[in-house]
Image (tube, rainbow, N blue to C red; front, side, top):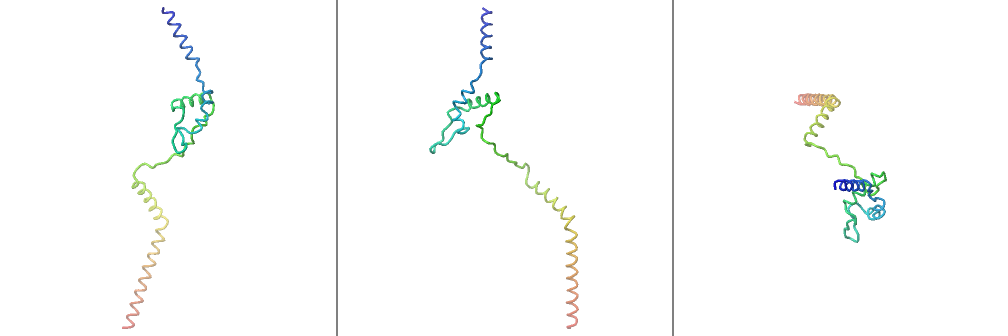
Length: 137
């Protein structure tokens, strides 16, 4: 008895090992359906799901790719969004510090000179006005 059971197990294992998923036939059969979209398509204002289930589509895709063939039915991938992490306040604070350092190095000497010049001009104008007023009195 044990000999027959062992032979049966070996023959089943051999049959399973030799089984090849018929991806070429399936691909030929469902090519038109697969080209309509991944999940389904709109037809006359109504959504129609694909005639092939997602599980069978995935298995067919896997077998085609394992065989080294090209799978042209995947939609183009969109560019990934780069979402910034963290708080906006922290990012802005770092930008402000960098901007302040840049201004202190490049623009501050000119700003100080302009301020001194304006202050001196105001002082000179005030002295001239005082002198004119003294002459008028």
